Image (cartoon, rainbow, N blue to C red; front, side):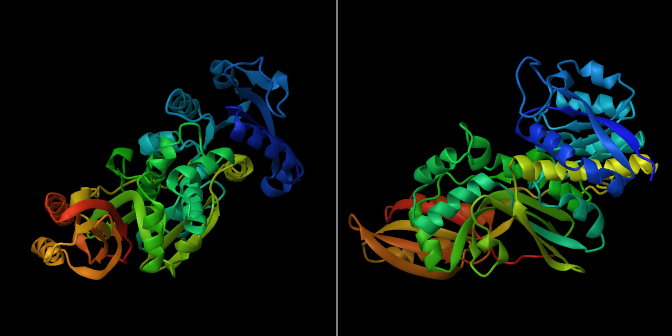
Length: 432
């Protein structure tokens, strides 16, 4: 087999960039058999060329994007720098110049993925981004190819390793949120500023990408309802267990008639559900289709080498496409216009924890307020007495968010209610 060499440039030499460079070297002997050619990393774009980069020779470093853009030998751009700009500009210019692109940039793709995919199609170049969602887990390509005939109706994902690690510690060791977060920081699972993870923004970007691909309808990051885990307490976790549930930060994208529901929030998941057993920093995506049934994809959702493996998987595909003149079909372009439902119009079951006075009739008053707003009660347990108030734990039936919030507002103003301790959604199968 003739050995044809294709040259590439990596944009970014941080944790993932250095992992991609290392893995490209590890795969060099196999590349010919896998693709029909070999890969050479010719340049690596960095901000500071004087700074040493893990395992990357200094002579490959450049701080000038134009050196890469105008180099006709470089046919593949591997973007792992993150952020919106200058990544958006660089990828746009690369596509316009006829270069193939592989990206791991969830921020960019959640905001401008459809724009870039259309541009890539117009110029017959590849734009692949498996690493943008759930690290080493293959989910982008299955949604674009293998599952397109599955008539997908629901995607549920644990797509943030930091929050899953924190909730695992709270579940298995009884930790409070602050203690579990501190441990996540100590082990490198949480950034110095963890807001993107713990407030649900990271997961929200990934669900925007998955929702767009699964339903062929553009979902913007701003369309996704997001709620984080910072209010979850050890008591919530304890009571969830008593009811047979595990609390996870879950992203959901589902079809409801001719509309979409796309959201991220903490959720009580039945312990029998496959996602309930996903621990520590692992990610998992659970997919249901009318034709395909249920499928789950699970693995490391982040990290240097897991993410690099997803990036290099795309690079192998692009290299093969280049050598066999098959570039330009990317899939995943939205051709429908399904509106995303406002959160207040969606339906959920709720876990509600209240402090209620011991006055006669208090429970009846609560039931009356819930009932008048269309909120049914599936389960109710009176727990401990705290400073003269009863702790009441309720799980409701399915109810529209607007109605539940109206009931909650009334409850918060009642003299019988001494505190609303928690409000967490509960998963019930809701498809079609």
